[in-house]
Length: 206
Image 1 (tube, rainbow, N blue to C red):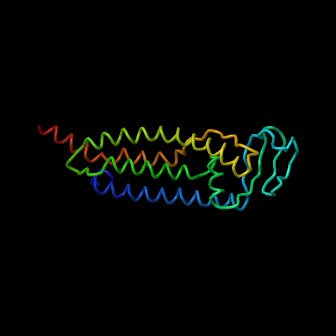
Image 2 (tube, rainbow, N blue to C red):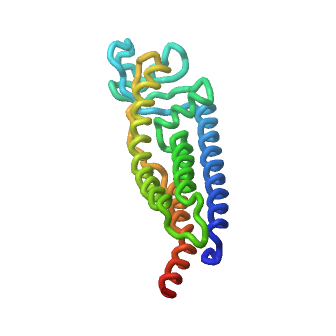
């Protein structure tokens, strides 16, 4: 049972869980980028001014890398040239595991490990643990904000770059998937259980 596990054992289990999540999310990001490279990507975009595209239906772009559906706002089908470009475009779409999600798992795992660094079964909540909890909670909120800013910047600047300033992406909001965050935060609540039990026992004996 988990209540019988020592703090040290729980930390080791969390390291394994973090490595698994990082590998799993990274693999999903890689596979999604591969699919985008093979099949192309559909993006909602704004047509920039003075592009010469007018309002054509299913307009084939001159470089042959995509097609564009009519209007000042429309759908762009784009074929990435490389795996890196495909991964960047997936960041804009935000519908699948992407580079931002990999970064999220890495940062949160590091913050949680920092929280419990140096903790032992005999020692309960140290100053580092209190600080660490505050860091983790702040990071959950901060990462959401940073993730949206990254998607907006990539959507407006990267799309303009690869399409020679003809388009900018319309970026929709996306929360970091709960499937990535919740198991890590859930494990965070389990780790100090043993120490809390020892603290209560110590208080009862005084």
